[in-house]
Length: 372
Image (cartoon, rainbow, N blue to C red; front, side):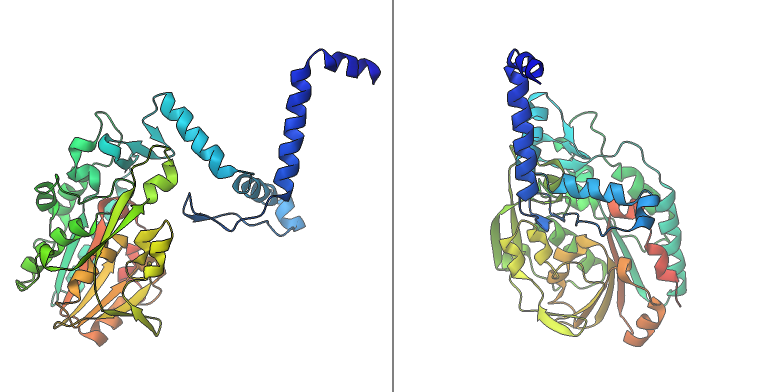
């Protein structure tokens, strides 16, 4: 032991490093366990309940590793340090997010399998054929790379919205696809997509809404400057949650003031959950998140069913002045036949509203033709 200590004294850095590791381990052991990471906008792993079965099936150890990684002391600081170091090395992407011009971030696409998209087109065509007596419209909203191409760095691996929309145009039953890409492109110099998030802004959604109103013959809609708009500073979206770049430029989230009410499972509230504006995931205030089924009462006429992803959440508030009833359905949570709901409600219109990225890989659209 004396000989060991004598040798260690020759290398004091080893002693200091060992002390540091022990100190970090002890602090980590007694650090508080958080349930959610605001920086990453997700729930953190919980400590797994032990069972011999999971241990023998090699399921318990990975869960322990997930818990340890999620609750490492000062985890958010280490994540930020990683982002800084990678930026200094000149990296143009991080954790599935590609950096663009002027602080814009985009979803990274390396290789693309279009087979699920082709299936989704077939599902929608079968639905249209079955409901040929109703006004069915499909909007596939392009994400930012398909509209704001000047913000995409040359050679960046981003989604090919031109191919997706081209395939949809050729293969979705004629007259049912409403292409809003050209309209959005004509306003690409405006703030129509968030820099740190994958959604379009409320202004971007309004341009698509106006196209839909014209498409359905409802020309009595408001211009954007006729609404009372509220701006909320320091919005950091889904792309920032993944990339966590240290030099981020926060977004401004805007919404139109509305007294419309939304019924989710029998509980009626304002269409906006404004408490969400106090947390980082501010976009969740629209439609109070992503309800599986919800009914919004409007001040207009007619009924519309919307089968949608989260792009519709800031789109729907505009519709409350045009329709008497707006029913929204998120197919991730639907386990019943839509045909019965359509017949019971006798909808005047049915709208599919998905963004191209979701439509490319969504596996729940098959349910629009199930359980009937």
